[in-house]
Image (cartoon, rainbow, N blue to C red):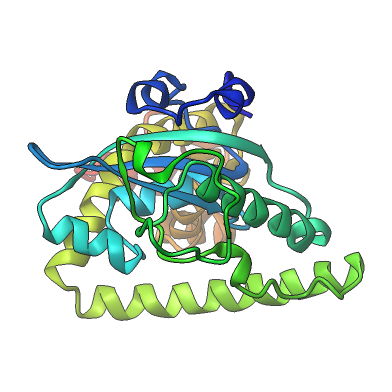
Length: 288
């Protein structure tokens, strides 16, 4: 839980924007949790706040927050705020936990959704102040005292939570099935988008590549150093699996497979030849 959270709940006055901004802006990795999304600011208008949770199976909080920043899969009220020229300002995390094992997904998801509902009520991040949303009079503060307006349109506890009746083993099996379906869907979706890309898809794809470029380069350098993708036959260290696959289909690799390694070596090209005539011919090519 965020530092100072218990004290603010014991206070006679509701949390302020300043208190929200005093929380750490670090987004934990490999975690589920409730995020306090100080979603929108617009000069001369009230700040809008949304409380939500993320229970993405494999990327957690970061996946959900990235989708907000990229304006993907966002709620209707948030989309309307964007159209009204509000902009995303800050994101703060109220509480989080490690992403659970597949067998515990649904139990922990129920807990996280319950916490989302609790914080939405206590901090009144709901859209209207004259509607109960199933909370009754549980909010400890006067709704008129909050210095921000809410963007939550419903009580998350009213949404059904599936698979709670299953055993951990059944949940593991179900998670595997869902994961396989998601992979197949995303593969097909990506293929269709690449075949007929929209301007929005191109922009999103370019932005994502830019974000991942440095991490990809580091990963490839480490793979070369560790010789993760190595062709022992040709003494080639590839940077990733796709490059190694292309090498294995190359004429150079096929030639070594067919003729084997010989006693005549070309060190600059890292090639060997079974006969001197082959070696001599090789040295006369521009590729050498």
